[in-house]
Length: 155
Image (cartoon, rainbow, N blue to C red; front, side, top):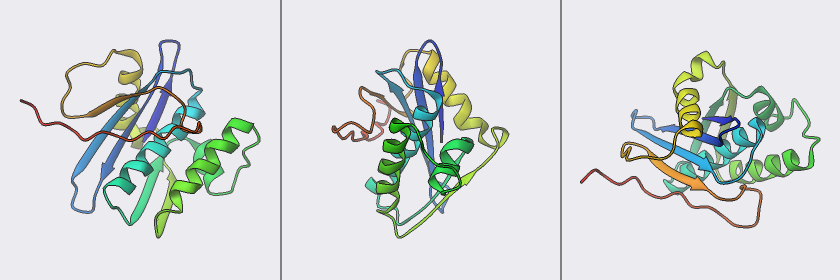
């Protein structure tokens, strides 16, 4: 997973891969301003929601955000009130799985998710049917809950 935030907009990309190698890619664009760390947490939460919806029982998450992964693993404290809320929401989703692991990887190893999230944050949504694309209108830490839609096959 990866998040991207710039002057044009913010977005995330999640690549979910099962043990057999089947991939689901999700691109979320935000209808609200977000910092890079907020975008990383939004990616984490969206990925965990999707994994829960498809019935995953074990999740191994890789992120190139040292701040987010270290906060989740208890190595860093979340001091900012919004980051605390994001951390709490993320931990709530992680507890839904019997087995979880969150690891930090380099940007080089996260290049596909990084490229897709940057593309989504700078380009308007189009007719790309191989990705699940959605606009997230509100941060995940607000009271509304967002549900990801299923990928539609091309017609």
